[in-house]
Image (cartoon, rainbow, N blue to C red; front, side, top):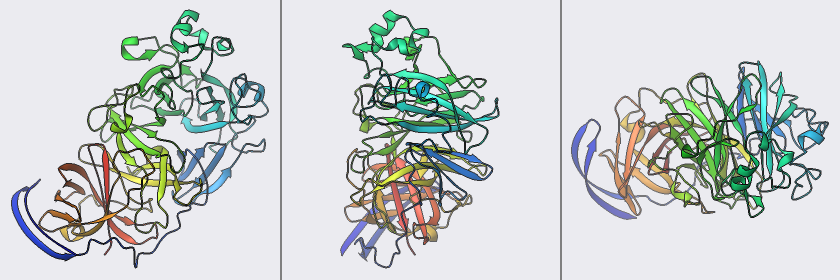
Amino acid sequence: MKKFVSCVLLVSMMGSLVACSGSENKNFTVSYDGIATGDVSSGVSVHDPSILEVDGTYYIYGSHMTAAKSTDLLNWETIADGYRKTNPVYGQIYDVADDAFNFAGSKDSIIKTDDGGTHVWAPDVIYNKTTKLYYMYYCCSSTFNASNLCFGTSTSPEGPFEWQGSLIYSGFTSKNVESTDVLDYVETDYVKKHYIKGGAYNYEDYPNAIDPTVFYDKDDRMWMVYGSWSGGIYLLEIDPTTGLVIHPKADEANNVDAYFGKKLLGGGHISIEGPYIMYDEATDYYYLFVSYGGLTSNGGYQIRVFRSKTVDGEYVDMNGSYPTKSAMHQNFGLKLSGNYKLPSLDKAYMATGHNSAFIDDDGKMYVVYHTRFNDGTENHSPRVHQMLMNEEGWPCDLPYQTQGETVSDSGYSKDDVVGRYYFINQGTDISNEIANPRIIYLNADGSVEGEEVSGTWTMKDNTYYMHISLSDKDYSGVFCKMKDEAGTDVFTFSAVGGNESVWGVKYE
């Protein structure tokens, strides 16, 4: 046990007060004794989950031709799984393999797959308001930069999605570029000068045509954001009458390429992938989610977010910055989730990433992703967490998967808030390190105490907003009552600052 004596000047949103406090015999030992653990399985394995809601049923679509559905965002039922002709969601893709896999994605492609198999990755499904059909956008990929984006249509979210054609190609060379549609939009000399480097595809400056997601902006225009590692994240408009991309006029000064579209982030083959853009009417911001790191359990996979007032950027983080070519990108982007351990989890969550996001009819906002575990395997499972916006319009990821919690719009009492918390800081690193909890106390006088940490906290009357300052770092966030993974009632906070996320969990 340690004795802490602190004298803090606390400036709250309601006024100023001086508080001097002494506390003795507080228990800072992390122990999970008496805390039940919950099952970490959702019942399905869907990698890179992209979500769609239709009449109260939620669908997630993932790589390797997988899909599942749920009515509660917690328990999922598989509706498609694996590379097979009988896959009910992906339709006749193998019947049109000569077209669908002509350029990339199989052993018979112009660019052969590294392992000789079939690759169909990272689908995203959207309901097209113009054609009244469901559109699935996905990619066929052969190597780390040779891919092409495709799309299919269906009258049902459960498919079958009938292949309609290819949209964008990457990984071509001067010898096979004529097998793509690139020369329909740019001249041969431009291709040689920009897209080809050392006789091969210039993957450091131009994208890998993978990880597409399609969305409507606030003016009901359709857009596709895409890209993985390589030259970064790109944006193209979609023609709603055809589902095809609209190639823009080149504008080098504003990073607009006539074929690939507007470059938003990244480049130099740094780890940035799985882009997803969501517009929030309440804040009037577009939020761009991406994943950093390697996708294996020890690869440091994680979710980052940027925001912009306009759909085509610029997208910036909490420090007003974004990663450019070959930047030390761990310093850019608000890190929402990485590797972490919390009470009630019998395993640490690892490589939490490649997310989608949505806002439901009640205005609740959610992030959907897959997680691995520190169990010596690469098994993975989808997760859905509710997010709440802080006062400054940055998303705060609640610590546990959603179980129907609703934040109190009228706020919480000090008795709810004060107490002993399991606390983690997600940091900004990209590594296999796990954010393990330590113990802190939010005291009634506005001070924060812990083993090697101290600071102050405030709450705003009649709201769920909170602020916490620790080690000269300020975080703005939210309080929320919810359930942990075992279904036990807990009181939590989630706050963000300086591109870091901090979480706290309190048991009665």
